[in-house]
Length: 88
Image (cartoon, rainbow, N blue to C red; front, side):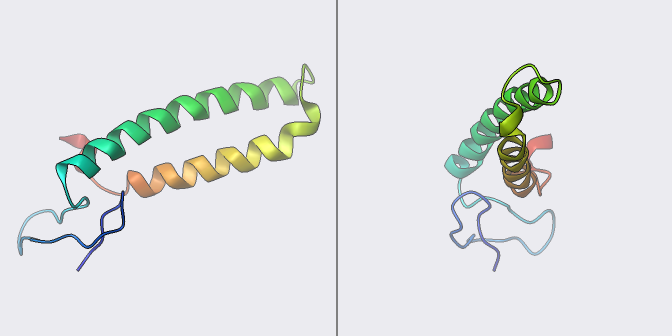
């Protein structure tokens, strides 16, 4: 039995044919869609901050922290998008 990509609960009622479910409910799927949008927005801001820091404009001492946060957010995004659910 697989688990929901959003909440981690077991997914009930998996069909034997077709694409396997990635979320346990419509609520979790919608919540994941919202989280994807938030992460994309945050990544845009972080990448702008990183660009400014690398150009020496501001926050040059923050580069490692910004890079670590970008990596963390990209990892979460990959987990949420490890499915074709968003192509519907």
